[in-house]
Length: 170
Length: 400
Image 1 (cartoon, rainbow over the protein chains, first blue to last red):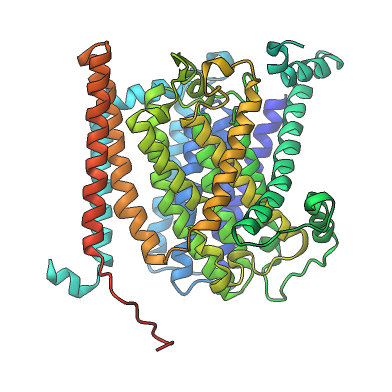
Image 2 (tube, rainbow over the protein chains, first blue to last red):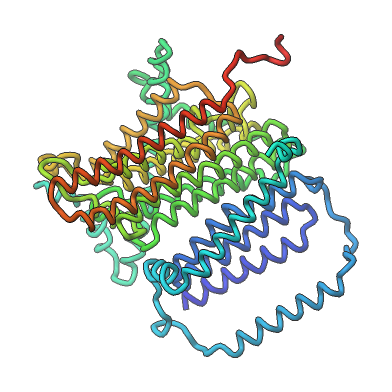
């Protein structure tokens, strides 16, 4: 009963945040509403007993992604400017629709096909230690590939941001 | 009352009060009692700290500090509270009023959440969860967003500059802060603060097994303290609110109780990060000598907390403010490599212990090798960075 109530409240919070992020006219407000969605999702994970995922969601999405979005808005001309009332259609809007419908379809199919119900005592309790051992054991190769990818992206970003004269020096 | 009862006094009190209620309500009542305890005790310490800080800074600057309200000015926080409650709450006409209102609320809520997993004594932790340390860092990261909200919504260039500085600084120093804390987590094998405190609980002779007494622990603790100073925007890292440059940084446009909330948030953040530093490296609520264990665990925790606060005040009275480029260079070129190396040293410490086996000589070799690596890296890195810096008379563009 209480779990259902919590789930309902969190769903409303998450969906309202997402809707506001899409519909508000001020870009910074959109970014802040998006972080409300991130918080809602994190609380959802926590209410399902997935502590590590939930807290990592806050650490990464609120602590880094939301800040990055906000910085990107402020450093470009978007800060404070309102988006127009009329619908904005980018050049490839048809492709965008196709992609989002395809992703939505795949997600719905995956949801419908997954064995339900997985709740209460049937759910597997995964501790942080188990996640760590899995990451260091069977999944160590994917982890390291991701690490290398991120390092490459970081170095690339530094080189892009480096002043031109310094680039020639090296 | 014997020392065991005194040690568990607050836990027993909580059980006692909860037992007065029907069984269905008992878990809720004891939870609410815990929350009330946290919400009452830490702001009280904050009130005390404001007096201590002003008195302490006054002493260091050869003046008296507050001495009008009550004996020795000890009632000053009450006067401050009345003042901030009765002051007019001014919101700039251009400000984004919803975000402007939410910013201090989000800040204080996030910081209070961090206290939920902080063990302040034996069995005295509100929420004993597996991933406690992760929760602290997660809510610490979300304070950045509230600082941005405050700076952006004020529509004031000083506020925005202060917020940008604060966010850049907090993101940069979060990396070494996390990496320094990871060492203690690694050696304990658990993210739970209670487990980390318990792992430091033993004694050799009269000395405790605190992590700060190992080479990697000492390096980790030092890095943690420096990063914590920067995370909490304390001097010498107080650029985001540098009074001489930015009026008051991101909370320039706040007045009355909202200003007080920012002040509260800042000090609560300082105390919680000090509390986690104590938990991770200074044995949490453990006694510093084996013959002092009769003193209650919570007394030790708060004694250490006050010592940490005193240290923060002392530093504020001593060190000048850094420049923005020095701040960034220090985080990325000095703290980050050292904290990464410290991770490797901690791993080496663990495996050297297995290879060399027990015994005093093996222990000594392990200690010396790890300490030598860290000291050597520190000296070499510091020298290289110092050589790269062109230290010459500074030219002031507008003053010349």
